[in-house]
Length: 222
Image (cartoon, rainbow, N blue to C red):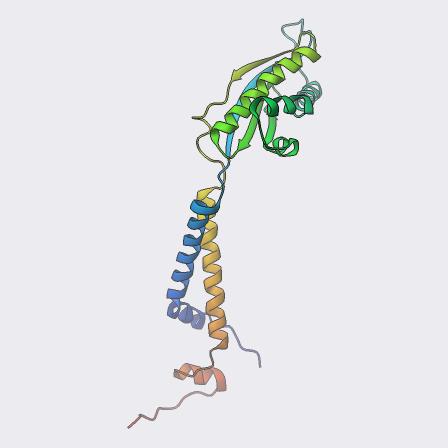
């Protein structure tokens, strides 16, 4: 005969072992805090915005369509992440990271199909991130002027240490919430194992649950 799940019994056991849940939660949050403060390496991101002007725009009312704009962004993205640009950045800043690592941390984004491009770089310090972004923009301006006639790249807003001072990872709130969740799950697992492996008869309800026979009375101990 299959046993039906009695949620009252489950609630009773959870209340009985509530201290385990609290302890597991504290351990989960404490472990996450230790990881955040002692082990996790924070990442900082610096960004700069540039305005790109294609070749020979004679009509002031000219507007880039989406296809032309996408090709423009792809072209500048290719220049930005080329060995020509990155190697000059590495040499100028004496970077120890290899080409692949720098490319991974470097991103280019274009919003609302405009001619404004945002260049971002992630590093272990805000100062390093700012240096790389601003240097990339400077070298990109020189390379574009060499490759394309009448094309210009103008800096709208450069990267600053103040803007990059707050780390983008790890996310403290999400990490602490995850630590709390893991602690609660671990606590529930421990409680479940204790309940399933505990065959001790302590109360009348335990006898009824095992034998399915109602208790008529009790004999007091003399």
